[in-house]
Amino acid sequence: MKNYLLLALAAVALCFTACKKDNPEPTPVAVTGVSLSKTMVGLEIEESVKVVATVLPKNATNKAVEWSVANTSVATVANGVVTAVAVGETTLTATTADGGHTATIPVKVVTEKVPVTGISWYSYYGMKELKIGGTSEYVMFINPADATDVGVVWTSSNPAVATVKHKRTQQDAVRVELTAVAPGKVTVTCTTDDGGFSATTDEITVLEPVLVESIIASPESLRLTKGGVQQLSVSVYPAEADNKYYEVSSSNPSVVTIDANNKVTAVDLGEAEIIIKATDGSGIECRVPVQVLGYLPNSIKFAEHNANSTELYETRSWHGKVIDFKKDLGMTVVPADADLRWIDWNITFAKEPTALKYEVSADNVTASVCLSENFSDGSFYIESLPYLEGQQIGNVRIYMQTFPCLFYSHGLSDDTTGTHIENLGGTRNYSFNWDASRYKSGLNFVTYCREVTAMLNAFKLYQIPASEYTLTSSDESLVKLTPLTTGEGYMIERLNWDKLIAVTLTYKCGDHTQTYTLNLIP
Image 1 (cartoon, rainbow, N blue to C red):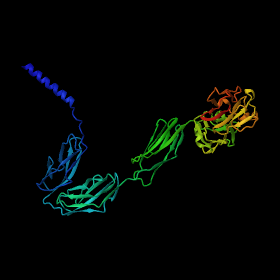
Image 2 (image 1 turned 180 degrees about the vertical axis):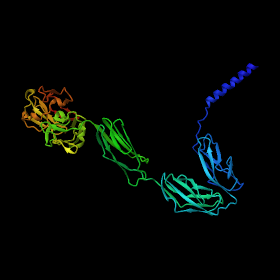
Image 3 (image 1 turned 180 degrees about the horizontal axis):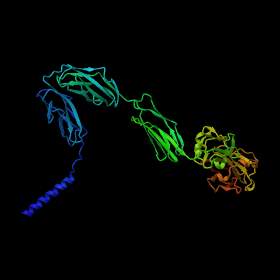
Image 4 (image 1 turned 90 degrees about the vertical axis):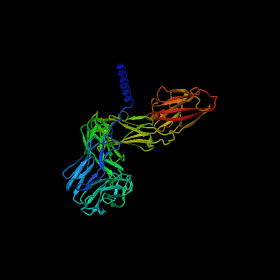
C-alpha cells in the first residue's frame, strides 16, 4: 500500500511539473508610479477619512503600498484610513512596495472645520495657447481663505487634447499642471471635495508646434589635412521654430569627428559626412561632406606651359574618348604625390551638358563627351579652369569636332589620299546610295576631329586613330570591313551587286555609338 502511495505522489509531482512547463508564469509588470484619490486631507480631531492609492500601471503585478504620516502626534494612518489626533499640520505618504514610488498630500487637523463656500479661477495666470508637448500651470482660489479642507478634483474637458495633474496645494489656492497632447481646444475644471463647488478656465487652445524646416551649415563642405580642425556654423530655420535643438554626429568617426561645440577634427585620410539632425521630430537634417586629403599641390602645368599659368592651352579630342589629363594634356603637379582633390576643377561643356562626364581622383582627372544621337552641331569644346585656394592656376580648352568621312579608294588599297566623297557630319544617322556606277573599287571609312577636304594627307594631325573606335557591318556577306594596315581607318568592300538592300555600319567610340546606312543599289 505504501508503494502505491509513493507512486501516486510521484505521478502528481510529474503532472504539476508538466503543467507548469506548459503554462509558464507571466512576466512581472513593474510599477511606474502611484497617485492618491485626494489632493489634501482636512479633519477635525478624531475624524477619519479614507484615501485610496492607485498603483500605475493598472496591470502592475505588485500593487502593495505602505502608508505613513510624517507626524503621528497630529494624525495616524492604517490601510489608507487617516485619523486626526491633534491640531496641527503634517503629510500623508503612500510608498509602493515595488520600486519605492511615492505620492504625498498635506494633512490639516483643526478643532472645528471652516467650510468651503466657493471657488474661482485666477484668469491672469497660465497660458491661453500651448504647443503640443508644452505645459502650463493654472490657479484656483478657494473661499474662504481659511477653509479647512481645500482638497480638489481636476478634470480636462478633452484628455485627448490636454491632460491635467494636481501640482500643489496652498492655504487658499490650488494649482494644476496642464500638458498639451494634440491640436484642439480644452478647458480645465476644478471641483472642491468640501461642498462640491466648481470653477472652469476659459478655453485653452493647443496648437501644432512650428517644426524645423531646414538646417544650414557653413561651410557646406570641408577639405582638411590629417589632424586639421574646422569650426562649423549651424543655423536652424525658421526663426520661430519651437525647438531649435539639434544633434551632431560623424558618419565615420575613424575619419572625422565633431564635438558638442561643432568643432570638426580630421582623424585620418578618407571621406565622411557630418550629420546635423533636428531633435523636434521633423526629420530635418543637414549633411556636410568632409574629405581628409593628402598633400596640398604647390603648382600645376599643362604640356609646355609654365606652372600655374592661366594662358590658354589648346588641344583636340573626339567624343566618346576618355581624356586623361596627365596623359593627353601633359599635366604635371608639384609635388608629384599631391592630392588633386584640393583643386577646384571648373569643367564645362556648353553644347550638351548632360553629355559631359568628368571624374577627379587623388592623382588624376578624366573627362569625356558622349553625344546624343540627334546632336548635329559638330563644333564644341570642353573648358577646364582649375582653381587652388581661390586662384586660377590653369586654362585648358579641348576642341571636340568629329566628322566620320567616306573616301573613294583606288584598287581597294590602303591609299586614303583618294577623293573625299562624303562628310557624314555630326552624329546623325546617314544614308549612302552605293550603285554599280560609283565607287565600284571600294570605299575607305576614316574619322576626323575636323572637317577635311579632298586632300586627306593635309589633315593627318586631326585624324582619330582606328584603334580608338570600332566599325561593324550588319551583313559581312554584303559589305565587308577590313582595318587598314596603316591604322588610319577601315576599308569598306561591297561583295554583292545583285541585291537591293540596306546594310548598317555601326560606329562606336567609348560610350558613343552612331549608325550609317549603306543603300546597296544593283
